[in-house]
Image 1 (cartoon, helix red, strand yellow):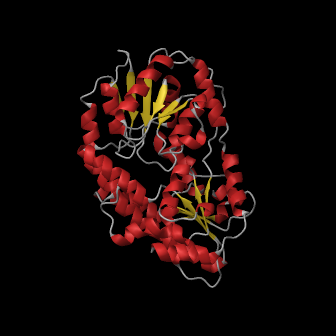
Image 2: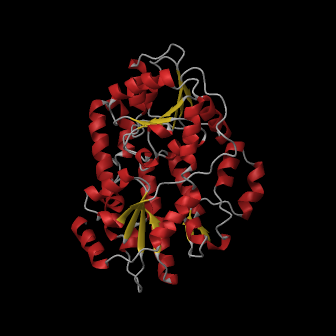
Image 3: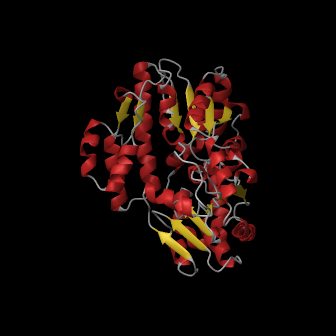
Amino acid sequence: MPLALAEVDGLDQFITDAYAGPLTEAVAGLLPTRLREKLRSRQEPGIPRERVKCLWTLTALEHLRHRLGYSPSVTFAKLDRQFSLAAAARARRTRSNLYLYSPYAWEAFTSHYTHEPRKILFQFHPHPALERRILVEDRAKYPFVQQTFDEEAGEFLNEEMRRRSRDCWGYADRVICASAFTKESLVEVGARRELCEIIPYGIDMPHYAADEPAPETFKALFVGNGSQRKGLHHLLIAWRQASLPQNSQLTLVCRQIDPGIEALIRKIANVHLIHGASGFELTSLYKKSSLFVMPSLVEGFGFVYLEALAQGCPVLGTPNTGLPDLGTEADAIWQVQSGQIDQLGARLEFLARCLPGDSKVRARAQACAARWTWPKFRAGIRASLSQDKPNRHSRNRAAEQHT
């Protein structure tokens, strides 16, 4: 998004955490391969360096708190506040507008200014009320996911921290969402539908066609946090119950995993867990897999679906994501209702029969991803900003009603 603004000289300042500047570039060659890849990815040549403010101290604090065992959700809530305050200070000094991700909006949107900044919100996740309701219902059925439920449902957050993400939409002149699912979660709590716009993310396509032969055996792949919200426990139970070919294989790539879900893995045959993978390794896994599957309970978008499609790997997910905005079964996208394990198992059985050896479906997957480019996303961001300025009184009434 900052690049979208910079491309038309509309960026006053990009406030972020770790960003690869001249010093980090100089030492990058001395770092381990995975860290070097990550650091080099945190830079965009199209954004003028003099317009980037990097809050490195907050990055250091984040990692220190993680090592000391503090709750990640509390750590992020505390540190996100500092980004918002920095944005508010910059807006006052330069009389600029505010374009903020939802975790960083509250303090900046509710501050007082001598000018009247336009306030644009990018809603990062579905509204917390919907997310919590879905997770609570699921935890009642599967209590062994308690650890990630506590983090993702906000059990460790106090009322002030909850309010930051719960109420900031009411102070926005316009809200941008990456999926219809996210938009509807805001409309459900009172946001004006006409002020919420859907702009799906984009992806950089690989420089080759999806012409590799499809795997001859059924190989499914999951990539993401091994948490309740991602529906990994649903996938594992469905995999165990489904009547799949004997040589079927499920590979899980999870940097972190819920201990209850990890214990479940040990009870199921033909499941291989990988604790993290490099970008090169992930690309290889997508190419060698018949299907990418992530039956998320609640997702703001699910960029990994688009990542899989770009590599020619068909995907299976749920409507509680950005998948309905990307395509249909004609585009190698299959969906089952979130939490419906019988549906998920039946769909796995069907795909285990039809996907192995089918290279045409892989070409359709890649063709679908090619329609969703980053230039298209950035053009959508700029188009949304060019629309007429919304009525301030209507926006403030919404904030008063919800606060």
